[in-house]
Image (cartoon, rainbow, N blue to C red; front, side):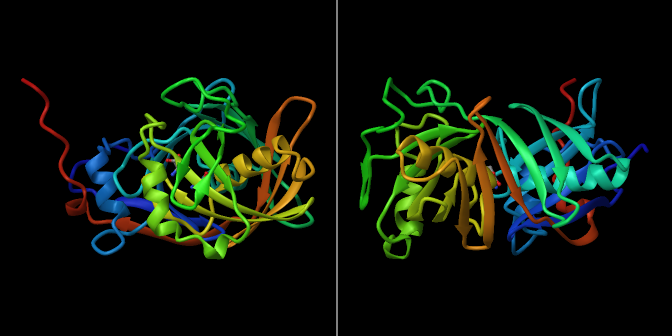
Length: 291
Ligand SMILES: N[C@H](CCC[C@H](N)C(=O)O)C(=O)O
C-alpha cells in the first residue's frame, strides 16, 4: 500500500508485564520513520507513549519477519528487546498459524513459541555475550567483576543479550534510589554505547527480585533482555540455578540459561491493549531528499 505523509499511521499497542510498545507493521506501510518521529510517538504526553517503538519488516528465507527496536525516549536503536520479541512472536503465530516462529533482529535469528497450556510465550534470546568487547566496555575488564562503583552500586556483572547490561547485586532493591543512580550508570564512560542497569536481590536459588533502569527509556515495569542478563549474572556468580523466576515491578519472567548451547530462554505473558492510528501531523516530515 503506497502511503503519503497524509496517511494516518496504523499501530498496535502491546505490552509484556507493563513494558509497553507501539508496534508498526512496515510490511504494509513502509514510510520512513526517522528517530524524531519515533520520539514523537513515544512521548507520553503529546504522542501515544511507549517504552519502545517496534517495527515489523518483511521476513526472508530464514525469518518469518524482521523486527526493528527503537527506544521511546529518543528513537535510538537497540539490539534486543525481550518483551517486545515475545509480543511480535505472538502476532506472527496468530498470523501464520505456526506453533513456532523465527524473528530476525540486528543481533541474530530468534525463535519464539507458545506454551498452549499456559498461553505464555517463550523466546530463545540467543547466546549471552560475556566478553568486554561484546558488551561493549570502553576498556578490557573482567565482566564477572567489572570493578565499577556508582553511589551505592558496586561490582557489576556485565552481560550483552545484543544490548548492554550492568547487573548489580544488592541486599534490598527497595532501598536503592534507582531513578537517581540509574542514569549515572547508564551514561558512565565505561559504557561507550551507554547501558541498561539492573539491581537484583537474590531471594533463593530459584527466585530473584530485580528492578531496571533502561537505556533511553528509564525505569520500566519489566525488561526482558535485562531479566536474561540477570539470570546469566546470577549463575556466573554461583547465586542461583540456571532456571530462575525473575520478579520485576510488572510481574514474573522465567529465565533459563541453557547449559548445552549458552542460549537464554525467556518465558512470560503478552497482552494487546488496543489498535489505533496516528495522525500524520505527529510524524515530522522526513528531511527532503538532497537535490
Ligand atoms: N532499553 C533497551 C531496549 C529495550 C529492552 C527491554 N524493553 C527488553 O524487554 O529487553 C536498550 O536500549 O538496550
